[in-house]
Image 1 (cartoon, rainbow, N blue to C red):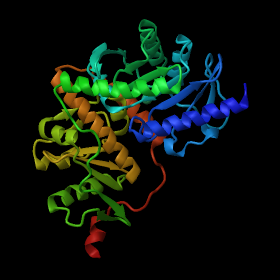
Image 2: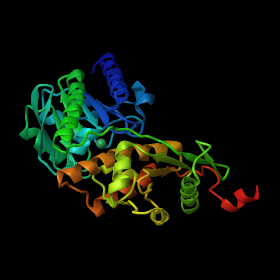
Image 3: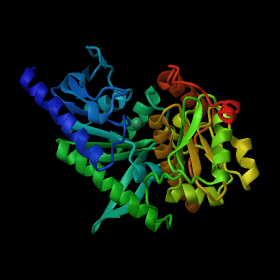
Length: 370
Ligand SMILES: [Zn+2]
């Protein structure tokens, strides 16, 4: 292997990841990118590192056949899926796996193909059957779909995200962008929803030395009460993002119960979230290991031990709410089972939970004293 070529490929992966991050198709550490370097190896982004922090030495060289790798960085947990793409598609040299919003949401509806359009062309996007992330079953389901649709450069992984292939990075990136527009067209056309994605934060707060500090000084009393209740019931919470995005507001008005439709919802938010019908019930819904508290007609409070964690929950909730609306309007969907959600949630908490003591928990008495 030519080491200069390897370095160039690593730099290419980083460049592509930054571009996709910039246009919003890759967020935080979610998703991954790989590039074939010869018949036996591909390079892939590492697990758990943000795209903006990537350096060439973090990109991992993986064997296509046996998935072995060397070095201190662990490759993405989805290497089985990347390897399957390189094994099945000899013409494929670049793979992008994203958790992009509209394509992921279209992939929760229990349909085998998404029939839609991009500009003036009809587009058919196959949806690979669901299996839990990182499993052999998921790699098998992806392989099955790739073999069945040999000319297809983009597939949806049900309830999870996308897999975009190309003979070079440009083709793979185009596929990801095209799929997002095409799936948005699908949601507008079929589900009759034209929703703006993204977090719309309003009354945020955090703990400082056991006291609540609000971002907005004139945060209303009824909102402060909810923040106080969350901090007093959840000693692990130190940051609250009040998410009032389009989709979250809609769900806070119409839903009564949200079951996970997407893997990242089960992982970061919990196995399910109740949406209360009236103000008083908000307090009942503050629960351990459920990182979202809905308020009727007023969006949702997304909680975490740090600003970063609470923001991640807010991003995942927005997407989850778009999926929920699509499912309601489509009339059917493929929901994740409680067992699958519980397993993913536990695994995620075990792997990513912040174990460090981040400071004092909320102490209401102390606040009254001072
Ligand atoms: Zn993924």
